[in-house]
Structures are given as structure tokens and as C-alpha cells.
Length: 398
Ligand SMILES: Nc1ncnc2c1ncn2[C@@H]1O[C@H](COP(=O)(O)OP(=O)(O)OP(=O)(O)O)[C@@H](O)[C@H]1O
Ligand SMILES: [Mg+2]
Figure 1 (cartoon, rainbow, N blue to C red):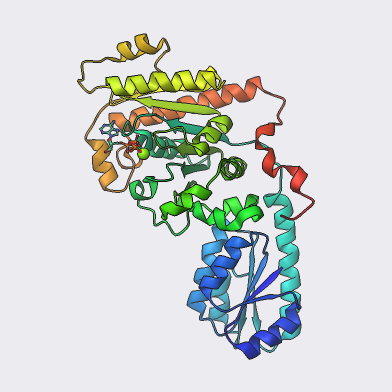
Figure 2: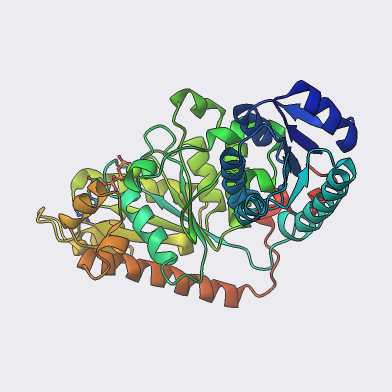
């Protein structure tokens, strides 16, 4: 379907005649954003001549990373070389003159054909290798879940050869946006508006880029959205992201919410964080009991003691004795953690050589190793947990 962004009524009627009756005419950028969010299947936007080049290129750049299959054509009253080159650099597919109806029609056809090819190869393609989902959890607040999630996500992507998405499933008090100083221009709330139209490209359109290979899906800004983020929506989101990124790291609230239970279902590894204090330890034991009762495989459990060097009277050995399981990793206590958070960075990016940074890299390396081993031992390939966007849905363009 084609969308025409045109303020001028006379122009819009004329262009619509060329582009086809089914063209949706939209008057301003805000309407366009809402329309595209609600209609992830849209594949062409034609921007009328009354919109300045600056605004037009901003719109195109915004969608370039998240909806690469969405094509943009610019209509200009004069075809100047400087304008055309700036437009092309921003990702505009073609620039055509106001009075050239046949050029507009031909450009629209080319763009729609290209989008269809891209959708075939990128949007609905069965992933050759599925990404892995790592859930960070602790039933006690303030143990360091967000610290572990952000640092480990950054460490997993640090080599530049893997793509990573961090997901803030602490829907009510999520602070990944604050911890990484990302402006929440998009959040998981955008998925609510897509309703049943939420498909793979819709899920991909929710994320914000933080680094070249590190993306974030942020928690709602408006707490009243939370009730609409159901287990089904969580499943679609995690499944879609796992088909898109090598790693999906999920941060959680200190509770077994509906969405977190779904995340436990879908995750490949759990990073179960505790600190050296009795309430934390008690909550860890309750968590492990719950996971056992729910049949969540112990092979996925990885116990992490955060602030392991804090002098609390409890030791790592005490935790081991209390739960009867090995401690998978420890992270020392250090002032560097809040210091880096206050600068909006992770220790991994700001102080990679610091002992806390090293501990985070070590965790990421061990996740990588576990994933490599699990790939070797499950050589048959098809993993049906991520079936919600599988080829079965390919025929109908959702
Ligand atoms: N290893 C550490 N050394 C020192 N301070 C730490 C360490 N890990 C976390 N902190 C501090 O502890 C506080 C809580 O950490 P964080 O926000 O990561 O916990 P959380 O489990 O996500 O909390 P919540 O349950 O509220 O989401 C933060 O102020 C953080 O700076
Ligand atoms: Mg947190």
C-alpha cells in the first residue's frame, strides 16, 4: 500500500490519481508516524513538495534503520543536484518532479517491487541461525539486575560481530532508558497500538539503536499501558527479536509477572542474581523452588552473586551451601557501578579494564561458550518455540 504525505489538497488529489485510488493521504508527520506504527505492512511513502528537505530527510533517516523495506520517494518542484544527492544520502529511493506523473508512477512501481523483494528476503525469512534469549532475574529488588543486563548486553556485542538487543521488561519501573541515557521516542507501548497487526517487521520497528550493533526495546513511559502488555504480546516481541538479533537480553522486575513467566518459557539462559544478604538469599531459594515447580530446566540456571566482595557476614560459600548449587559467576562491589550509571554508561564501555568490567566480560564469554556448546549438541536445527512468526504466516502479508 502507498502512503502520500501531502498538505496541499490540490496536489494530493493530483498525485493520488497517479499513485492509485487506494493511496492513503496523510497531512503531517505526526499522523504519518501513527499510521506507520499501526500499519507495519506499509511499503511506500511519497513525500509531497510542500515538505522541506530537512524534514523529509529526517523522516527517512528515522525509518531507515528500523524499517529498511519501507521505501520513500520525494516529489520536488525543482530537481536540483544538491537536493537530490542529500535526499539519496538520507535513504530516499527516488526524487521526481512535481509535474512528471509518469516518472512518479514508474518510481513508485520500482520502489514497491524492491520493498516486496526485501520483505521476501528479510522480513519473512526463516532465520538461518536463531538468536539466543538471556533473561536476568532476581525476586529481590535492587540486587543488580539492570546493572548485569546492561553490562552483559554491551559485553556480548563488544566484539562487533554479534547484534544484541536489550529489552526492558521491568514495565513499571524500568530504567534502561535512564541507565543508558536513551530518549524513549519509541517503547514497547507502540506495539499495543499495532494490535493484531504486530508482525515481525512491526516488532523490529519498536527498537532504538544505541550502538551500531546494540539496540534497546524500552519500557512504557505511561504506566497505564502496562495492563495491555500481555503474555501473548511478550511472546511476539521476544520471538521477533530472537529472529532478528544474535542475543536478546531481557531485564526484569523483582517479581514473577505474566510477561516474565513468558520470558522464562522462551529464554535459553537465566542469569539469577543475588547479593550476600539473607533476604536476597531467601528470595533466591524461593525463585529456584518456583522454577523447579514450573519445570524450567536447571541447565539454564546460572547463579550470579553481585557485590560479592561486600562485607556482610555471608560468603559465596554460604550461598552455595544454602542452595546446593554451584555459583556460576561473581561480580565485585565497587563505586564504579553507580558512578558509571550516573554518567549514563555501562562499566563495560566506560571502564572495561576495571574488575567489575572484567567480571561482566567473563559472564558474556561464558554465555557465548554455553551457546556454542548447545548449538553443537542440538544439531537438528528447527526450534519451534519461535513459531509465532514462522513461515506459516508467510502467505498472508500480516
Ligand atoms: N557491583 C556493584 N557494586 C556497587 N554498586 C552496585 C553494584 N551492582 C549494582 N549496584 C548499585 O545497586 C543499585 C541497584 O542496582 P540495579 O538497579 O542494577 O538493581 P536492580 O536489581 O535492577 O533493581 P530493581 O529491582 O529496582 O530494578 C544501583 O544503584 C547500582 O548502582
Ligand atoms: Mg532494575
